[in-house]
Image (cartoon, rainbow, N blue to C red):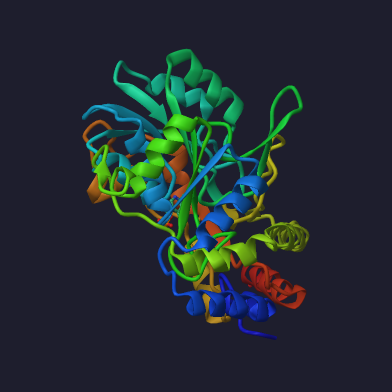
Length: 376
Ligand SMILES: *Cc1c(COP(=O)(O)O)cnc(C)c1O
């Protein structure tokens, strides 16, 4: 059996090596390393794949979030509602821009921002909601959009973990994550579902004017060369990364399917183990399984993790500490104990190896070891 990784980037590369190598060779021959034609080609392909109105490629997923927030031109001290259980990048850009992260607890089953708690967080200074489609499943966007409309708030979807996931509205219509709010923010970090070979990101936008502003902001605020409309940043998707992403985009549907099939197999293999809960599926969203995250109810999570490690099985805790309890984000308004669900999740979640190259043999080995840990 091959060594088990959380993510097998090399294995994934090997299967498409010829295509990738050819695309890279073209980039090297052309030597248009910045703003080469591959960037625009990929941007258009992504727009069509996601049925997005506008796509602005940029340097990474964190920049995508920053560009979206910057384009809305909020005032210092304005408040943005963020799930209490997410990756740091979501809140980081808010704080960096002088805005205040206001946390909302997540749903016990889906781990996603709870629409019922959002309304209670709204004050006169609230300007936006940033739902995160954590682990590959869409936040409950329809009620979130209703709250946003009612209070005139912007919605920025952190779509770094859920590219290609679809949400079903009450009327039966479907929408890709990132297309329901004002913006969707994507990361092409190597381990993401669509990953490049370095850093990369993109903003999807609905409004043409906001899309134009984002595009200018990503390029030093320029509307044309040496005409600076606003203070921007330098955030570009490299030509080489765009060329790699163009190749891999053709495999994204297949990659998603492989992840979903691996998830289904885990479900079957793990369903008999009463100490753990397999990932809950929200009826309104497909799940693209950026992570396959189980919950362990009897306080044995850390011991299980160690046991698996001793058997050569990696696993990860995404995320061990809620952001509002991190030194960087401490705020008297949110002491320990404020968000019971988020704090409980930090103690009980465990993400198992999940990628496009997992074999049945590997998954069976992982499940058997979890079983034997609880039988011992
Ligand atoms: C990966 C990730 C980001 C940031 O993406 P980078 O490309 O690493 O900057 C933001 N939010 C979430 C939820 C992520 O998983």
